Length: 125
Image 1 (cartoon, rainbow, N blue to C red):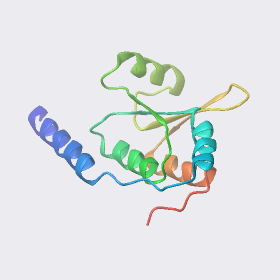
Image 2: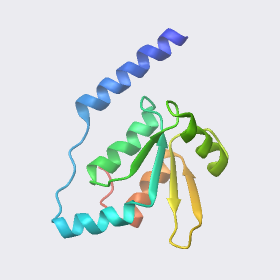
Image 3: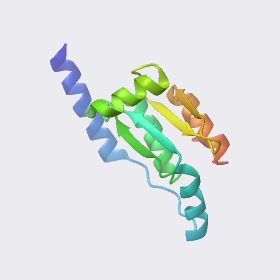
């Protein structure tokens, strides 16, 4: 089973590399304002997780600069995820609000819907 998981992981990484979407172009001011808004977001993920790839592609497609934290390769990120979110489950979007509170959002479809709604993005077709 370990060998199968390793092979599938490599296939997912290859597909991610080969078919990663291009971002949309915005003027410098609009992109800068968007970058300020996304600075308070962090995506806890695993590189070879297909649901994490789905979220990363949505962010790339819409040129959202969200910090990604690989909870599989970095034990500190895994600890943050369990402490803050309550589960070692990815993908998880950490949303830091302006009042200092935090929201931890799991499920790739929920994360993508949140990003589309918050940043008024066109849904993926």
